[in-house]
Length: 548
Ligand code: G16
Image (cartoon, rainbow, N blue to C red; front, top):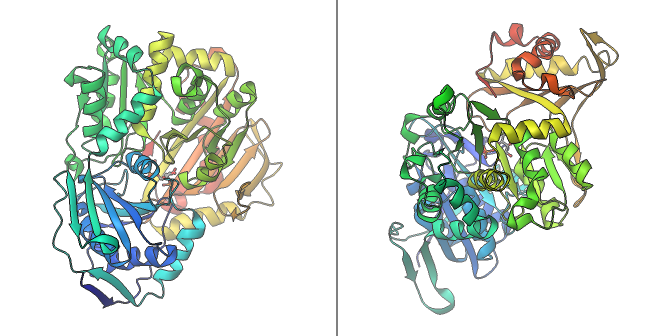
């Protein structure tokens, strides 16, 4: 094999964010940009002999070219085998499953997740370690440091590999052989789901006329959804929409929320004509949104419902070890954990923080307000898993989504919750908002705002109980005396300017008020958030871009 050493210059912007490196496609298309980042990973990880790498992506624009480059670089950096999802398509949870199932050294997932695709959209790359989860900060920090001093990368002179046909491409013999194996990742993943959930019960539910719609948003879960819902659960094909992956996600924004999953939301909020159940997942298939008939389930509530009903699912019939949620996620699951008498951990935003807890057997279910929920069956969040979990609960309880949610609130009280996103605002203005709030840390405690009094405020820090690492500056918390709170955070996944997230939460024990719309119930708190942050004056924005 002819291995070339190519001289290169560092790029100064290769610091991974909340989940890998995400940039505009055109940034990734610059000569050596992807290569520098990949080589920085390989150098940091010191690849052992006979190592195997999983590679795939969400099918967005630039996916196929990037896969060929990574194959050539893996060959030049000592990997013995690269396992690729057929046509380069691999959802994030399926990649995590493959790394675990085939015990590979790690995997590279090419995705900018819920960000838009196409030539003018975003591209991204993240590295998952041998446990199947996102690389922890100590690795991504080291990779960034390496990317700042890189002077050369290694790449093999290989012909383009056919990644559309199942099978093996082999170069060389014996110990020196390099193999690219193209596999059917859909089957592996569908088998795993069938092991976890009560498929006969879900099948019966669908046969009995329960009407559902799953929206793959033209992204990676389409083929998985066809196999699971239509082929294995016998749902009618009309139960699926937008299930053909496209390089630009049909021109849409593959983010399963009330704003961007507009077509599904219309179907599910059609009054009497609304279906029983609706769900959507994102670009790389790790996010999920759950809808009932004219009803939206917040991701925080969804996590709480899954935890409270876990024993209805065969895989969790013996109970769960514990739960974890990211800091901005509501405390709804904390109440469930308390009742179940299992631990509940609060981590920073980012799935990578759950890996240690799962590996140590301390938690079974994890979730984030950002439409992510999953369990220790993989080390990523898992969109279709969450959808099947809800269907399993509905099938066993024989109750609809809204009825399940309202019964849950009656038992535990309701953590009324909403997130307001201000997307693509100038970075200076966003930093100004955060600095302004921080400057009030000494004076806010004790201050009264309408019916709320500030108890304490801080910038969240996490001390990992397993490896002792500390992650600071993870979001500003303003905690009120009655347990309500406002959190301000800058997103680590955007690629244009800054995205400021405002998370609002208030506990409502009174069931007579549980039906209230969150925006109405949180109206006073929304005004307090604007007052404390001076957000309108400092950003010029009078309304959020997305409300969930
Ligand atoms: C990523 C991470 C999640 C995180 C989310 C939002 O999700 O994997 O853990 O909660 O971003 O992060 P931020 O608030 O910093 O934008 P995904 O689905 O984009 O990979």
